Amino acid sequence: MKVIAEYLWMDGVKPTAGIRGKPRILELKDGITIDTLTSSEGLSHIPIWGFDGSSTEQATGDKSDCVLKPVRVYLDPIRTTANPKYTSILVVNEVMLVPGNVPHPSNTRAALRALAEEFKDQEFWFGLEQEYTFLRADTGRPAGFPEKGFPAQQGPYYCAVGADRISGREIMEKHLFVCLDAKLLIAGGNSEVMPGQWEWQMGNGTPTSDPLRVADDSLVARYLIARIAEQYGVVASFAAKPEKDWNGAGMHTNFSTKEMRATDVHFPLIIDRLRANHDAHIAVYGDGIQQRLTGIHETASYKEFSAGVSDRGASIRIPWQVAVDHKGYLEDRRPCANADPYVVEAMVMKTVMGK
Ligand code: ADP
Ligand code: MN
Ligand code: MN
Ligand code: MN
Image (tube, rainbow, N blue to C red; front, side):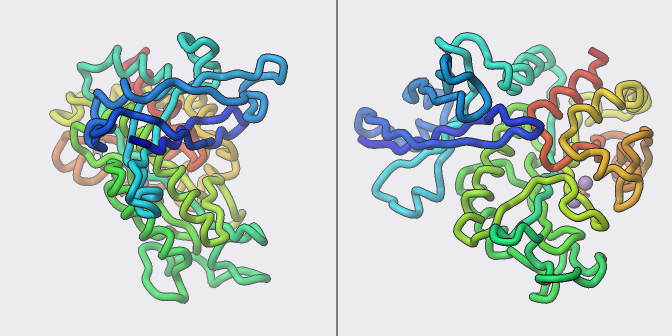
């Protein structure tokens, strides 16, 4: 049987890595189901592959080969809908150096994999609020902005309804269904404060929301939004600050450990550790962070760490329910929309564990 496998990986572009993908037609023995392919056994059917790293800022032309090592398999809802005759899958890969045993320097997943293993008994869960902005491919302006000038000032657009307030809903809705079909841990979404700006949440506050799964699912969700938006002549941008005088786009990172979900006794210690490592976090929380974390537009200044209950002007927000229950999770509001989920989660885990 033929299986169409879209191999996905992160490139080496700086300062913001992007997603690359190419399909490979696999000839597998008959009768392998999508359930098998997406189970832990699935990877044994998916061969390693390669690509030209000199075109993705991961190698030089004279030593161009990089290795793609499959690490997780999903149903590809887009190709499955386009032609249900075939089994179509999305394959997340780690980029490895030839011949495939050592992670490539751009492979940020490898470090998270090691931490996830080291701190397995902590049972970390993550929930990433991925904001993004639809930009018209022709003009580069946010969808919902007029040709010239600006829309009425922000306020009515967040969680809004109505053609005067919303742009790109059809893409957002398609993306939601496609993410569900791929069995991503998508937990919801909403329109954001700037016109053309949206959010989804990856990670659903259950034990499945482990660090690697949530980061892999985020990568796939980013790929899928870009893929769907292509059909509308729109770019789903993860730029941190697409428009100067408007809210930027973040990737608020909600996290908890087994202990945090049982009691908040160590919350002050965790917050102290986050404060002590503030600059190191800012350094890896995405491109344009100084422009986004200004201290206005629902942000805390990148220059200063702060934490507070219900405070959307703080670096770390303690959700009110958590303050009432004396247990739960924390929200790190600092990461930018274009931050690398593997890097952000690894940074949070290291700091929380005092490593
Ligand atoms: P906000 O009020 O900041 O907009 P959202 O509802 O958009 O918050 O996102 C909250 C995210 O936190 C969701 O992805 C949710 O699944 C996740 N979350 C909830 N509980 C936990 C928990 N205990 N640990 C980690 N993440 C959690
Ligand atoms: Mn949110
Ligand atoms: Mn938001
Ligand atoms: Mn948030």
